[in-house]
Length: 337
Image 1 (tube, one colour):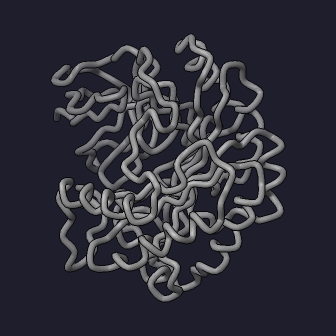
Image 2 (cartoon, rainbow, N blue to C red):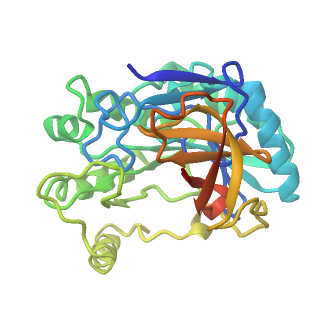
C-alpha cells in the first residue's frame, strides 16, 4: 500500500530539491509546479514508473495550496522578471490534486505571472470545468494523447478503463474555449507510427485559438527508473527530427519546437546549495518516493537519499550523505554508512 505524505501537515518539507513534488527552476522564466505526485494511468512508456501498477513507487506526495503558493511567490520574487510561466506538471498527473483548480486560481493572482500552462492526460478534467479554468487564468493545456484508435490508446495507457473518445471530446471543448490547446503525444516507434499523422490532422481540424504550437511530439526514451516498451528501440535524434521535418512539409505545421516558440527565455537560477561530491550531515524527515529512499532536509532544500536500509527507521536521525546529483537544485545524496 502506497503511503500518502501531506506537506506540510505530515511533514514540513522544503518544496525545492525533490523531483517528485514542489518547484523546479531550470534557469528560465518557466517554473515547474508539482502540487502532487502519482498517476491514475499506467502508461507503458512512463519515464518514472508511476501509476497504480508501479513496481518502484512507495509514496505519494500532496502539497497544501497555501504552502505551495508561499514557496512559489518567493521563487517568482527571486526571478525579478515580469513574464513568468507557471507550468503545472508532475511526475504523474497534476489534476489528481483535489484542490487543483484552487492552485490555478491562486497562481493567477501572483504578480508577474503571465502564463499558466497545464500538462495533463485529461482523464480527470471535466468539460464543465473548461470555462471556469479559462476565467480563473489557465492559458494553455498540453494534452497527452497518444492515439486516436480506441484499442491502441487503451494499450498505451495501461488501463482497461481508458476511453480515448472522452479525451477527444475534451480536446474539442478546449479548442472552443479561450484556453490554448497543444496535443502532446509520445511517438513510440513501430507502435503508434500511423497515429501521429492522424493526431496532426486532428489538431489542424480543431483549429484551436493559440499563439503557441498546436503539436508537441515527444520522442520515446528509455529511462533508468522508467518502463520499457517490449521490443521497441528508441529512435536516434537524427531520425526523429528527419521525420518531424517530413511531417512539417506534408502538413505545413511547425513540429520541431524550440524554447522561444513558447516564449521561454533564460533567467538567473537559484544558486546551488550543495555541490556534487560534497559530504553533508542531514536529518531524515520522510519516506522517499521509491523503495530504499528517504527525504532528508538541510538548508531549506529537500534531498532524496538513496541506499536507505532498515537500519534507518527514525526520521529524526542525522545521517551523513554524499551529494551525487545537484542539477537544477534537484538533489540526490548517497548514504555513507
